Length: 72
Image 1 (tube, one colour):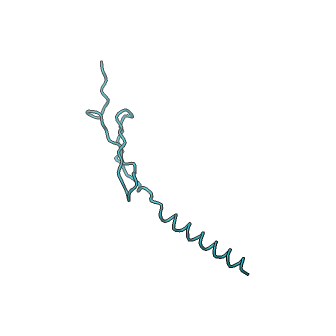
Image 2: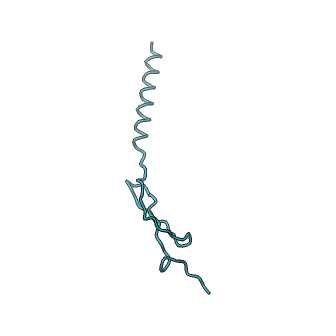
């Protein structure tokens, strides 16, 4: 009888701990960026914070006039 009570208690505690751990996970929100082409050499990643977590944001175009400078 004691073994059944102990096993039931452990199962309940494990289920509660799993529920608490899953609810504590902070996920980054989905982002919607403009559908424009940025050359790979011009794209600079930007970041933001959401509930204390660093999340990826829309890329920033770091090239002048939006295109890489080529030396001729």
